[in-house]
Image (tube, rainbow, N blue to C red; front, top):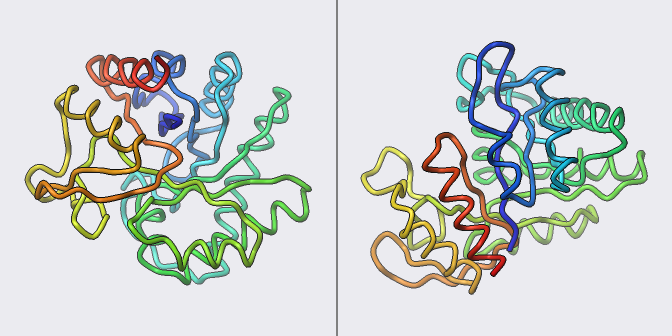
Length: 246
């Protein structure tokens, strides 16, 4: 199982996270594309760090909402959603090309990610954007979505458009019995204890997860998301890397 991390989310003089310290421990970097965070210089620096550590690069597009950090839903037509995803993915890919690399997947950010998982029409709009980029640029971008207990409908749509999905789980988030993330507003929704996080990643690698109520839920995931916002979280990511790569 691969570790992925949201990165490149600084903007100008405003610093978010510690990407340089996290990069050696992850497999996939979801790099912000300028709408919810980042700018061309931040994107280029993050790409350079990813290349130097042989980390797979993915576009992390969101709603155009720097003030809300892309965590607020912004009404769009389905066509506009497809276009904003293509616009941001194309921008990051161009930055990558300057350094002899390219993106290999797309992971929507924040509210756009949540809206995609709650509304099949938005999911299909994003799938169409990915399929269009693949067809016209002759590449094979994948789309990262939330691993749920049942992703059959989304898998069927993706297969129709010939787009491969990457199923993502979370190292530090509690799961409900329905296989969804427990909302951050609820007690116990986010794990901070390193041992608890390690335990969850080990379970996910085995195809299961313990829900917030203590039940076992079978969950297939290709990658697990980690966050590197402080020194403790970076140490946790390093420990997870060693767990998955003994």
